Length: 374
Ligand SMILES: Cc1cc2nc3c(=O)[nH]c(=O)nc-3n(C[C@H](O)[C@H](O)[C@H](O)COP(=O)(O)O)c2cc1C
Image (cartoon, rainbow, N blue to C red; front, side, top):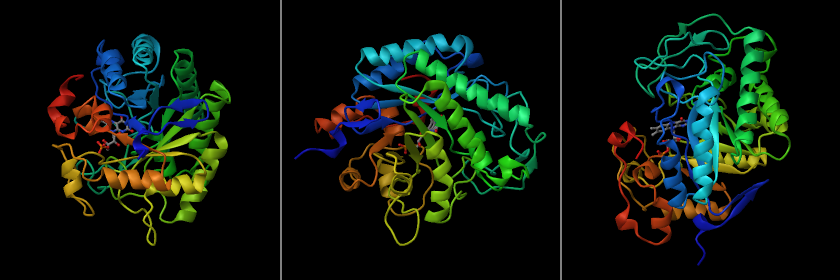
């Protein structure tokens, strides 16, 4: 029987040998924004391990307020040399890689908050008491972005995407999720603007995507990372109904998104009542674009939490317990690809081992792995 995890797929000009994506995971190791010299090998090891597509960890576009903290890699200036090497190393190992480009907006968080001022649609930020906890009282941080600020950020996104293309990447992913700047525009609680960017909260995202599309031409693949939740508030939602979600997605698709990288935290969770479809399933259906589903795949602790809410699994052992569910969903066409985060940090050879049935050999994820580039 053919394993749906290992079926090839083509999305526009992007030809992928299987359905397994390395989820974007920012790991720092980029003092002053320059990625550590170990980045190319770190990503090449995942390509050698059989992952079909690598999405780099979040990078900061070349706008002064874009980075999450002082250790987030830049995607501009001197940092581009290491990124060019990374793309080359992944290609030499037979893989594909796209960078995730983003702007943090107001979300630089203590204790790693950047020493530069935050910037957001309305200057309103709702920090959670801790990661993922419900939003606390709102904070006013800085002035609302001016139209000149907005234009500058849009231009920086376009430049980063053009650089990705020039350096030989296989596409680009725009970070529109997790409470970063684009998501701050999409969310009513952080976007209180009364101008065109507030009357239509999708306008900023659509303008960024359109500028990126104009910069890279019609054939260069553009993904957008999308989530309902924020890093600071796992219960936050952009759309409470399929209709609201459809309305939100339409301008993004029209502006040029080729596929959506959906961040679910728990892939099995139904997004709306009355259907088992997860968010990636709904986005595929409503947007007509292929989707990636990621969150909790291959992790035992998460598997134990199956169907229930639980704490973020800081230690997570490998498991294949729910892979048949994932395969069924792929088979049914609920979504097209899966993203592995912690599983692929734990074991770079996860795809090759799963393909060979060597489940007992899978190495676990441990938070200590984040200290370096393993
Ligand atoms: C260390 C770490 C860093 C992450 N950094 C990013 C990031 O830069 N951009 C992003 O969109 N998601 C980021 N995420 C979220 C992952 O892409 C993924 O959605 C999440 O880990 C859930 O998948 P998993 O259960 O397979 O780990 C990060 C996750 C981890 C564990």
